Image 1 (cartoon, one colour):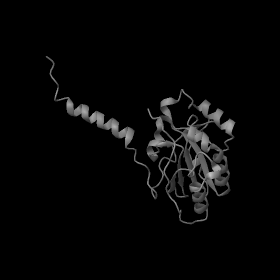
Image 2: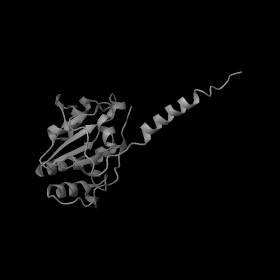
Image 3: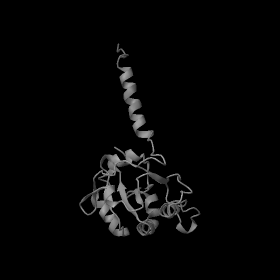
Image 4: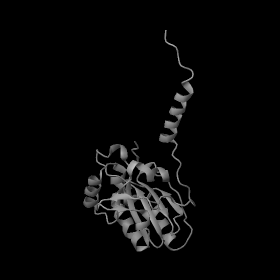
Length: 204
């Protein structure tokens, strides 16, 4: 007859809850909080290490957690290039960050980043977030997931680019565009948050 080890049960429960909290209860950075890890080094598609401090603009920084394999990213990618131009014109540094650590060997490697960036025509850095450290710090859950910080690294907008991933011509609310223009003009952000819609980040 086998006996259940009641002494081991609390430890097993703690391990289970710890795992569940890690995977499902990601705490997202709140509006008004300072964005962390601006000195965190990531591998860029040009083979060099880069930080958010290095790309930070006079008026702020735009961070987009993205990837190569998500259909939501592909659907919004026609607007990526427009956002790049808008950010540059308004003194906002920008970069894409790929946090999909669990599928690095299935379309999310640095080589895959380079291929995707070249095909689409990205003009800003596209980096690898090793072990999704940056995504964890910001509480990002999706690709794409957008975070816009001001010149003091304070978060002023987070969420989705706009309200229609499928069709740029049918967009009713241009959340990110509006936030960029308002930030550059020194105005309050009318809509500081929107719900991020996309593929879940593939954490280890």
